[in-house]
Amino acid sequence: MNEIALLLSGARRTGRALLCVAALGATACGFGTYDDGASPANTSSNSGVADAGPWWPWVCPDGSNPSPASASFNFTASGSCGAGGPFSISVDGCLLSANFEVLGLSQAQTVTHSSTPQLGGWVVSGVSSADQTTALTCSSSVPDAAGSITFTCSAGEPPETSCQSTLAPAVSP
Image 1: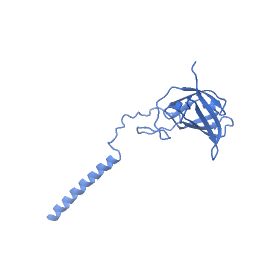
Image 2: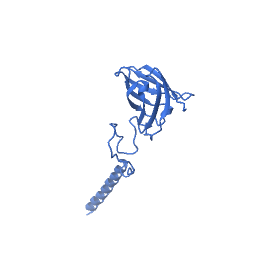
Image 3: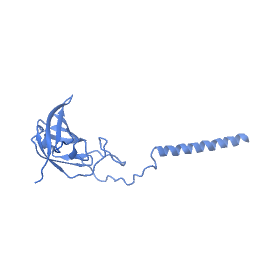
Image 4: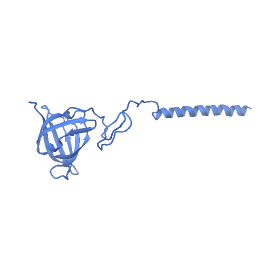
């Protein structure tokens, strides 16, 4: 009889231990620890850009957080990257939107976005408008004292500077 009581007692301990392990495992996997019910559902098609995923918070491909839509920031471009002229840039989510053709860049894609594009630090890639074949990676510097951003494009392996332009803040009339 003692043997049966000992077996039942061991079974109860094993059952409790398994229950504790299962509860701990569920918590460690995130079940019940975060309410993502507030995450917006994707109910419309996109522009071909990969969705960040079903879990909140979303992240951009470069690992940064998406930014709310911003107003356009206006600059005047001059230098060896493209024809130059009026240049406007804004951010929405993970994408920078600008008229990169002014800087000699077509098929531009955001590599590193910035929630404050007027402060530089963003990187784009694309194709040279001059020959439509040369792949370029272009970066923006932190503004100088006058608020101008240096825009530098590189090509090849190892990368060599192919052009450089200045984005000076546009003066409002």
